[in-house]
Amino acid sequence: MVSIGLTCTEAKSGTLQDWVVRTFGAEDVVELKSTPGHSTKSVWRPALYYDNEVLQGLDGTTVELRLAEQSLLLLVQRLDELLHFIEPATGSLAVHSHKSRELLILACTEVENSWGSFLKMADKTPPVRGFTTNDYAKLIHALRLEEYEVSLPRYSALPPMLPFGNWSSSNPTKSLVWYDAYNKTKHDKATHFSEATLQNCILAVSANIVLFAVRFGPFRLFNGAGTLPAYINQLFSIELSNCDPRSFYVPKLKLPTNQRADLICYGAEKNVEPWIVDSLVV
Image (cartoon, rainbow, N blue to C red; front, side, top):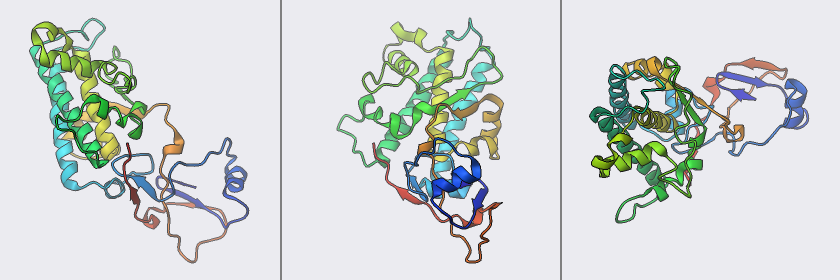
């Protein structure tokens, strides 16, 4: 049994299920959807933790990571600036302004860019007129977007948010309230200026945080160094809500030839074999 930084081994006796029940008292044992040592391109799941392991296991590059961090930093900084002037409270979440409209358009444009990148990573070719939300909605379950919950702990008026929680492939634009608002206020400002609310801005920026976490893992946002983690830690928290443990990854280890036969627990980070990255399928 392997978790981040912790490995338990014992000489084989019986089946794996026998062992986890006998040793750990496991109940309702289910089988993982992925083979140990396999990951899916660009889709983070628990078990990928260390920076070099995340990039290798998700088939990312340092250049892609740097550009994604810079784009997200600009959004979070703009939201932080907006929060200096509008305090998130029950009566102010519907406040709108030229600045909030500007941020909503920028944040949703970045969301579209990320969606398009994921589809291209899945070898989808955009039609002549480009991808639409009918195409983007194919990512809902492939990226497990509905599981990501974002909070702003400093602001009690804001409950935890699931930016993609209500996204439906049967109604791919209107089921994302913040994205529908962006479309309306972008194309018809005179009629829909009021759609550019503070709440929609917060949701749109949160959606970008989710998409970053899917592509590069969440740990770098909160445990890394630099300006972006400083802003993220100041404003946000993120967790998986009602997630399916069967979708988690498990690393494959190469154990030494003289491995002890008794039950031992130890850190085996150096024994993790390179991940086999499977294609993203949507």
